[in-house]
Structures are given as C-alpha cells and as structure tokens.
Length: 175
Image (cartoon, rainbow, N blue to C red):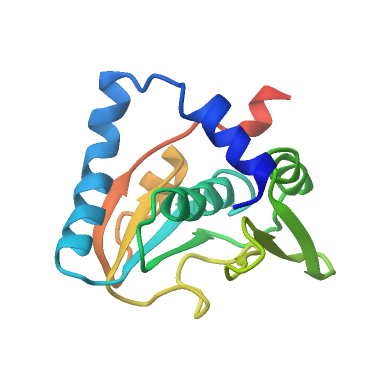
C-alpha cells in the first residue's frame, strides 16, 4: 500500500470513532462480508447511487482499499447508478490527495479512471455507468445503496443477493 495512503488510514481514518447508530447501519454489510469469508466465496459489492458520480465511487474505492488494508481476500468492488453521468473530477482529486494513484485511461464526456492503492494490485476502474452495466456483477453480489434517492429509485436490483442501505450525505453539499 502506498505510504501516504497508509498514513491517511493509520493517522486519520483508524482513529475515528464509529457511532453505535452507524455501526448498526453497517452491520448487514459486515455480516454479508463475514458470511462470504466463512464460506470461502468471492465478495462482490456494487455501490449504487443515483448519478454514479460521487458517493458510489468513493465507497467503491474505499471499500476496496479497506479490504486490502485488512487482508480480506477475494473482494471485488463496483459502482453504478440509476443513470450514467460522469465521475466528478473532484472525486479523483480527493482520492489523489489521500494517497491513491489516479490515472485517466480514457477521456471524453464520461472519462474512465484507474485508481491504484498499491503498485502490484489491480486498479479499481471508475467511470459512471448504470448499476446493471455488464461491467458490474450480474449475480451473487451485495447491492449497497449509498444515497436515499437510489434507495427509493431502485427498489429491486436484479441479481443482488442482498440489498443494503448505507447512505452518505452528498459530497457536493460540502463545497
């Protein structure tokens, strides 16, 4: 893991206290991951938000980083939306600021990014797409709803083993 990223995790993220309320929100996701680990099965998680531009990408990348940090094998994180727009450029900048390597691998109105947390690990691929894109798993995954609009806009996610609401405030509301 890149040193700056490990420092971010060790000096900022690890010292955060998670409230009991948030722990109860996260528990179904923890249970899903633990069951897959216990059954020695791959852990596929698709983070879903309306525009697939901010929250779902941040959740996708940080979940993949957490899996690597805590040595949880066979974790594959994805993201999607109820519509495709583009990954917001400030998301890429924020990830860079935290110590990840972020590369644009295809330009255009919906750029494709490669995000790396380690020189020898596969890149997390980030671009805006619908949650049911062929790029994402089609079965045997947890659908993690990261915004309230996705929760009401996607009452049924075909192929999902489990639908788990883990909502976040919209980053665009914080400048």
